[in-house]
Length: 308
Image 1 (tube, helix red, strand yellow):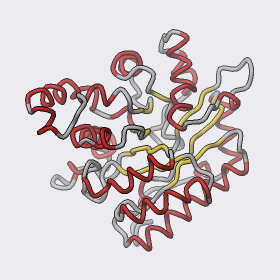
Image 2 (tube, rainbow, N blue to C red):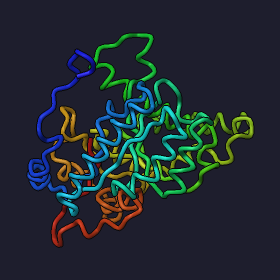
Image 3 (cartoon, rainbow, N blue to C red):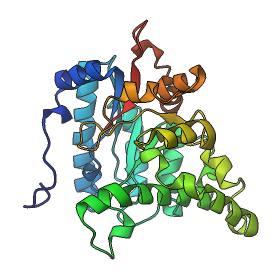
């Protein structure tokens, strides 16, 4: 519920560890990386109220991991409407809750991620060595047109994710914080289709007015992306040509649009052994900065997947 209005119907897959593991075993998934439902990020609330919601969510995810530590890792939430407060919270994400990073929205209550006021958060993420996963949230393009929920979810989410990535690539964030590990939902959305245009702009504006040292496509190859694009041909292109080695498995479990049979889907892509290993476990290990190979059972073809 948001106020008195129903927002989304959930079932116990969102919080029941045993139910999740049952589905994971069915789907050939060795480990899930849990993250908050994006609405729980609460950027539109006061920072004090949002911190209460974020830490409640962080604690819930921590408890799920503790119940099955070989099967789960987690991303938490911070009050990014107040970047300095979010930076302070980052110190507790791993120390208090044992999480591997945070999930953030593709915009922060209407503000693009490349804005300089978010630098304290990026600095803290880099200093603490925490992964940052960018998920679509309240797309900016929806505000003037009042689209249907279906149009927003299926069309505007990947647009907003691409806008978020472009904002970072064009603002010099990755130059200021070169060791950040940032991942994007929905395979980066439309980013792959506009990298050539972003590079051309970089060349013809002297590095976007000398604010950006490296061409956007080069920066993009150092970021991470989930596989949740549903189209096998595009996923092959993304994982082997656009951003090779930087795509990890993702499914949007347990929601209606989740990728069905993820292990079969990934094995059906026709990837070579190295690319299959990267998509199955390698990229996730690099994104979380942890060797996750112990999660895989010998002789199986299980995968790691990012989750809602």
